[in-house]
Image (cartoon, rainbow, N blue to C red):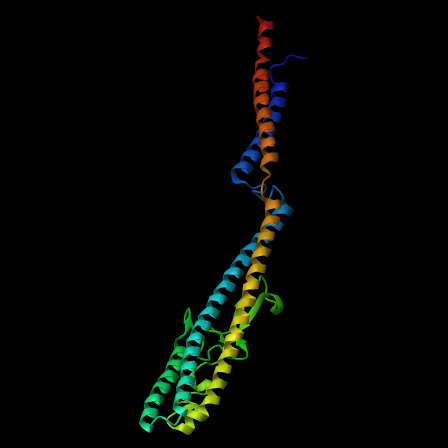
Length: 294
């Protein structure tokens, strides 16, 4: 080996391998600290692109689950209002049956009719007052056959969006709730037809069938609410499962394998220690040349 002063080839080589080992140690430390295999685009450009698309999809699916759960709460609120209307209609049926018999005087029927009208007024009040997050549910606000979301306030039936795109078959449902006031159900003083009053025996008898029709109309609305709620609950389950599977797939791409990376960390640590020791030895070799001059 040639002894020279100006350069130290062994130190240069040792320094090169020390830098490589230190870079590997730094990379392993970063991965173990963050728990991620991909911490920058340089780590895996293609993997990063796929992982970020999956992250966006997962975030959108999770928000879709929340949207669907909000819609379920809305439907439960509407059904709760309809259940109270149900009780009022049953009471009105009972009052009409009571007024239909001939054992009551006209004054007594007027008293019965006053409660009948109070029940009808309460039905209308419940229909106008039932709301979810400021959205009126039973007053006909959501009874439209079409939906328009072009304005600041959407009109027509309610659009529940839960998907990651905008395809009708996959990404949203419509919620349509019919008008549920007393007049819409055909009962009470504001209605047209025989169920507007039970102040006479003939009116009371004629009101019985109309009240039955009102109960059927109310049941159709509740059945529609129930079917939509069941459908949304199934949707929540499907979206949750899809989100979980995507998270697993994204984890396999972006997350670090702790066992493998720990082994790489120990390897890099040993190489750094070894290269550091060899660099120290290499830096002492030029001093041997001084002994030749003495």
